[in-house]
Length: 462
Ligand code: FAD
Ligand code: SF4
Image 1 (cartoon, protein in one colour):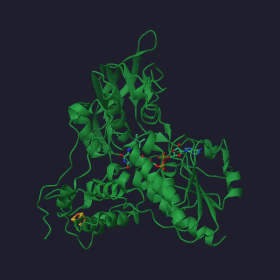
Image 2 (cartoon, protein in one colour; image 1 turned 120 degrees about the vertical axis):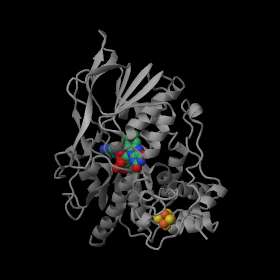
Image 3 (cartoon, rainbow, N blue to C red; image 1 turned 180 degrees about the horizontal axis):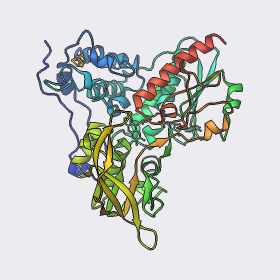
Image 4 (cartoon, rainbow, N blue to C red; image 1 turned 90 degrees about the vertical axis):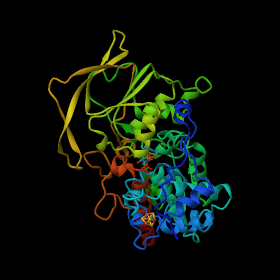
């Protein structure tokens, strides 16, 4: 009999006082005993509201039942029927908004820790050598290229390969994974986990090439001559600027640059590595999403006296994963809610000294239903800072769209899709942040999977 009233196990974590100064993984994978006890809480609801709320429809009650039965390899295979990156999704998906947010146990006893169980199944099956990549169908003789190696392209490439096509992934950087590697820090997603998930896709026979900047090294028009279809999963790697005075001061980073230096170039190991990074005594991070949390928590690990996240709305509207906000608080990061930066102040040499803010109250909801921040007249204040990190959003890099004639974009610069999910060019498909302008790993993967289905249809008619 299930035991739903047992308390939810959030999993063990590194002690905040220790982890705030290291880059080792914060959350630890369940032990077998913990996983079995957590799996035992699941009621295996026939209508599976958790599964219905998962963007890629992971067979949640089924994989939990397999864990309960002691078949960890079977549980991982069950997840991989719809999600090729279970060790990643178990760690970084906003489960509280998707599956766990719809678990029937949520209100009374606390949702089943589905993310923790997914991660347990993937990590344990992999450690036991029981995580098997799907076997591709017989060769179709068709060739498809996926641009970018973020979660969207990885999911698309794996699905296309599963269908028997020859698939190549082209990546502009020297390492694979997109934001998973250059944005999300190792203490949330160890590099080894990304490497292993990419190896699973490679083991299916997908070819990978680094240092290929499509739009410069080779153009989409040229790719269309070599391949039967093209998938663009090039993400949204350009930072949005604040547009306030002082933004070019010495000591101001975009979260994108700050995180890339730390995560991709391992600047926190400088001078053992080539790339330096500076976090002075007082760091202020502007924003309230995952990038802001990651930047603040990375900055904290560089040893400043204080790190503050300044957000223009309240805690309720913050888009970051709930667990990351809690972890940031535990690590000693301060939060200043309902504030808008007006100017970044500098000394005579251009070094940042402080931020001039005004305070806000919440007004009417915007088009996304979040209440708008409204400035309170006369509420100005100045907060000292020598490092400022801006994390207020991302937008697509135009390298591909500007060099591909006939590829339509919207006024936001994202690739436009018609009602059938097609771009304006036959044989060219797109998904992930390049069509959304910034979303989540699972939504990006879902786009890649949906595009693979469309590409399969398109190739049948070719
Ligand atoms: P990306 O992951 O951006 O990958 C695109 C890839 O394409 C990159 O590797 C890039 O180098 C490559 N590329 C770009 N242009 C070219 C070109 N011209 N030629 C060849 N290659 C090219 N989501 C969550 O669900 N949970 C989280 O915890 C979370 N944390 C985040 C933290 C940060 C700091 C950021 C920035 C985002 C976070 N997100 C999170 C959002 C999530 O990571 C993205 O929505 C997702 O990675 C988008 O996937 P993608 O494949 O579309 O693009
Ligand atoms: Fe199990 Fe919760 Fe999903 Fe029901 S909703 S099947 S209890 S995880």
